[in-house]
Image 1 (cartoon, one colour):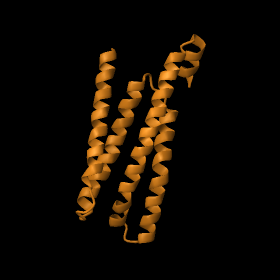
Image 2 (image 1 turned 30 degrees about the vertical axis):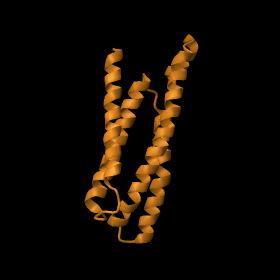
Image 3 (image 1 turned 120 degrees about the vertical axis):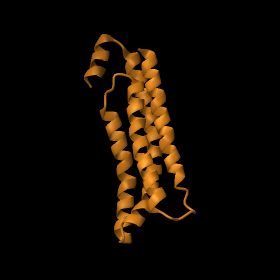
Amino acid sequence: MLRCCACLVSGDLSAINIMLREKLFLSIVFLILSMLAGLACVPLFGAIVTDQTMAAKLGAGTLLLLPLLSLGLMWRTNPPSQYVLRRYSFLAWAAVLCLIGVSNFFLIKDQANSNTTILMLGVVCGAISLHARYKINKQK
């Protein structure tokens, strides 16, 4: 918040516009990622929890909590550049998605379910994070 106020005082509105555009774009991407992660958690909770009603409640809670948590944390942060925001947010999503993907791969023995898709999505998020780190180093 302090950085945005300093930009307003100094008249540098382009930095604010760039960060707001980046956060808006990442909001859309994170909504999609959180829905995919929430849907991938539903069969995982079914495999872990023996009570089906409790597994359904956990799955519904995850579907509601992941978008709120990811968007809330992203909009509360105030990074120095859009590449720093992109790097750490995609790194966090890579960790979450890979954890869900590996858990689904080992805990769910159903071959009809494509458990490697969520794992590959986590690897792609990790690659995006590495590319953002490259862009940060290139800016310096």
